[in-house]
Amino acid sequence: MNMYSYTYDYQRDHLATSNLTPEAPIGFFYFAGHWGDKFYPLSDPRQYRFLGQYHYVNGPLGPRFKNLGRQQICQGNGDCILKDTLDSNRQRKMKRFPHVGEGEQMSEEDAKKVFGPEYDSAS
Image 1 (cartoon, helix red, strand yellow):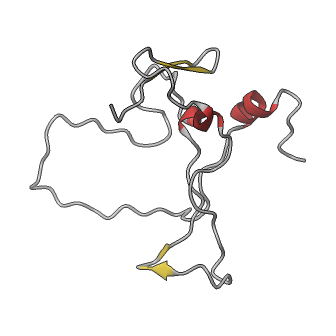
Image 2 (cartoon, helix red, strand yellow; image 1 turned 120 degrees about the horizontal axis):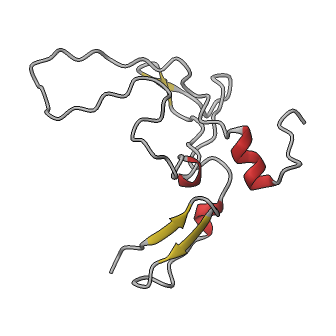
């Protein structure tokens, strides 16, 4: 029994534990910050790059900000290719990430849901 199971009502933004694991923690789900490391500029002695990638970058936002109520698989923010086979004969190009280190940003809509309708990102 090393698993936790939950149900999520995205319309009410409510996470509930299942009856299999009623004592499972839920506080992590409502954390509104970035999970993981904090981005440091190269001028900071703690930061370094390996093969062009920064070591310390802002972690992603948590599951609450992953559009859990989506109706489609593709999110509409770039290419979405669903494959039904693995084709090992094709040449793969290295994916480039132009905004490395910037991390994921909370949308205005999510920020107002979390911090209240009076939230203003400009302040």
